[in-house]
Image (tube, rainbow, N blue to C red; front, side, top):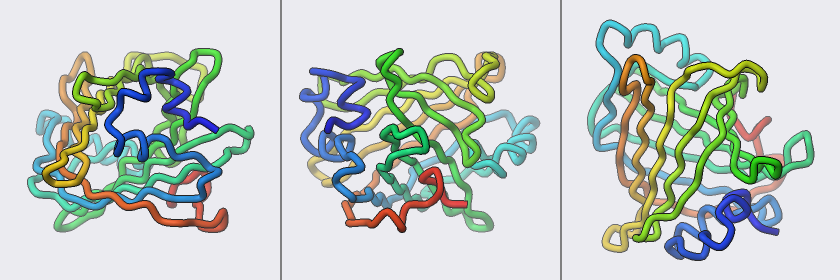
Length: 214
């Protein structure tokens, strides 16, 4: 079985760095989770006057208002079969600020009609977007979002997300870059950091509902 990223990238998947192939090649058949731990060098973005409104999104783990430097970070990826019988992978991101723990969660799956990955955002998954995937000449993975939909029906002008990840041999870790930008407001969220990753065995009972912790 090919992973959702392997299906979306096709032959380009073989150009990924071997460690990226391992990470983005997981499927539900392997019965493993990916656990990442590290620190984000800096988390920034959003004009100060608008930032308080982001607290609304923090309840659904879509976005958050806190900003800072050298922020501890964890990532959990679970590969599982969803209610429609399709392969899906959860992204459970946690940022540990001095007075709060914030989430930035998603579930990704492969859409055979569009031949790419769909990203359902937050714990509820009410917001979704289609991702464009590519491989850089250095073997890194680049994902960019397209239009955003609400409840899979209503298209609107929403934030666009760029995710870039590559493997650093020197540190034996993944370098992660994320940029969330709104066409009217500008940068809403930007962070970058180094994440050390391990693969751990799991059982189906250990996988949270929708692959997301509540």
